[in-house]
Image: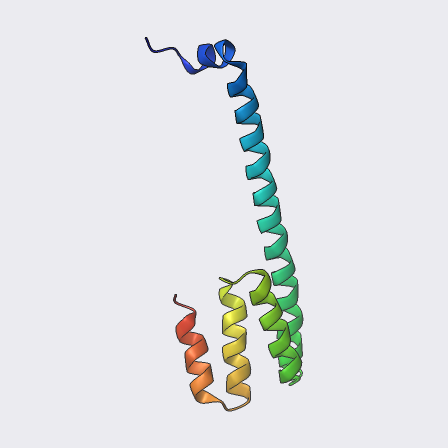
Length: 102
């Protein structure tokens, strides 16, 4: 016999505990992911500023640190491409830009 979800929850208190625990885990994961993205965004803004001032090595370090926090961050990968262009490393720049689409 099929019971509506609310009845199942009341009949089996362990379900309430499981739902609560799953919610806590998902919430924690979302917060951690959001924190990493926020840190990466801050690192990218700093790196952009450094690149604009032609401090290319420091900018590259900033973009790489951002990618460590958020490996799929397109802005950081693009920044590395722009830094490579500033150093006239055309092959490295092309590789970085190609990687942005992955």
